[in-house]
Image 1 (cartoon, helix red, strand yellow):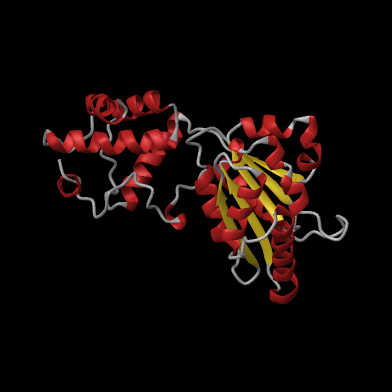
Image 2 (cartoon, helix red, strand yellow):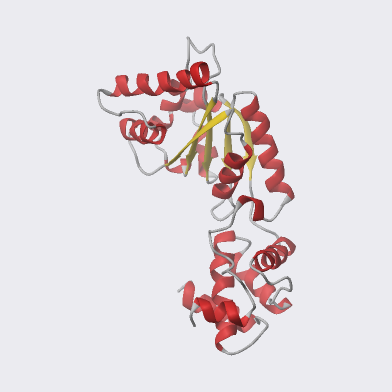
Length: 270
């Protein structure tokens, strides 16, 4: 079944359940909005924050929503996605995101990054924000670099705000005694969770609606199957729901049944 066949079968003008969803089209969820407002208030005070949530809870989506809500005239947001990096490599990634030349020794690189952040605030009048995604993968000694990057004028100026986004083990990492100085710089922690059963149903209907089908094609049995198999994990919901649409379209059905979700699971989660 081709994507065009699935679109035609359910009168959709674009494929739902892909990553290509604009911030303005995201489903409004109370816990998500609470987290976003808390983060915005924290950054307004030039402080740093953390986003903690299990895989598939929408951390990257929240980072996008946060960036979208920060006026470009007042904020400059830099995004880095962490892998297993050493101190110098992490700083190189930060420098690349900022457009700073990363040549020279490690101390010189740190100095250049700090100078650029400080310059942004003084000359350009914007507040620099550094978003580090997948932060649960940072090694403790590397995470300690953030204490250095946020230290300006003997730690007397609030210049750079850092937002760490990661799975729950990031919180465990920040509780280590060796990272107490870093943890103390986190003024707000936004907590995300997986979707409930009702939220899953609302999410399915919403994604179909913004794709052109105001009437959800998922019957109660398929919704229950999607929730049970995904446990509210957004990434799993998207994969299973799109696969189930394909299965229903293949058999010429206009409604997605639980059996379509089961078939999709065998195909997309095998």
